[in-house]
Image (cartoon, rainbow, N blue to C red; front, top):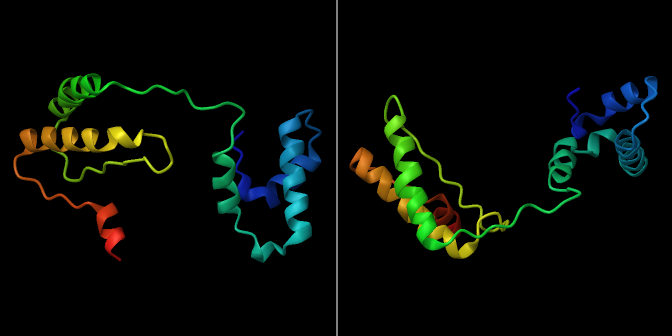
Length: 139
């Protein structure tokens, strides 16, 4: 069953009609009841509730910091092979820096970005680079 928290209004009716012996459904039902007690349905942004729930886990993410020489090897080996295997050159490449949320260690972000851009230049020649994070800083 696909279950999305931001669709709790419909889901809570579904859960109420079927007797699930599942603590997770009870927890979601409690969230729904508490929110609808405090707010009108029109005031609740279920997408925000869903997104917040996606960041909560019972366990921590695995923690592995890759050594700089291994990053270089992965970029010049694995990423280069990936680019070579593409049936045609990409027209748009998005690089997610993911450092503010600590997914990627801050000290590795620039090395990874530089290496990936270098591989793209070698494969594609001249490329148009737009650094959205710098554009946002100037606004």
